[in-house]
Image 1 (cartoon, one colour):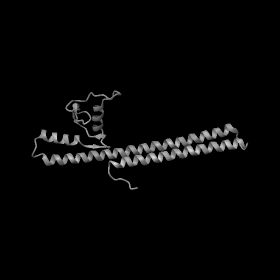
Image 2 (cartoon, one colour):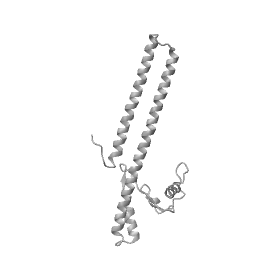
Image 3 (cartoon, rainbow, N blue to C red):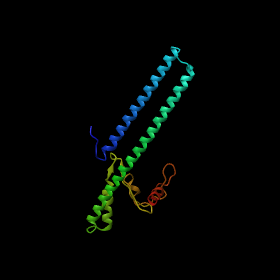
Image 4 (tube, one colour):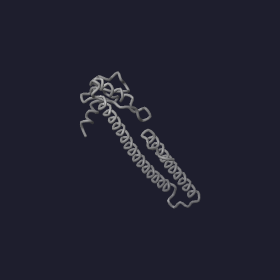
Length: 182
């Protein structure tokens, strides 16, 4: 199977492959655990256990904890990799949209008024979608004025500096702080 190179199929491909790898690793750990338990039971039955059943149980529990720790470390690593991949894909979408908007601006700056040109750019970017249609671009100015918000167009033209999410975070203030802080 060939690896897709487009930005739409690549995340789906990477996610499916990562899921398969994690499932195989989990199956291996479960299999190793079952084999270890069977060996312990067999040794206990044959009275070949010099440590006693409590010693083998402690060894098995220790080994299982070590394996689970390794699996947890691997999952944290995979999450970090996925997060970095997503960040790069989103940055590529923004660069592409910016290039498209710059082209339209340069193409029509002499023939359209500033308000018509802004409207053309906003309506063009309103239709810009990625991540299987779930991702969209939004535009806010540095005073917190919402210029483009495809998920809720009724908020466009409003100051959103005091908007809070469900946890009380001021969304626009956090975005403006992120833009101001490299």
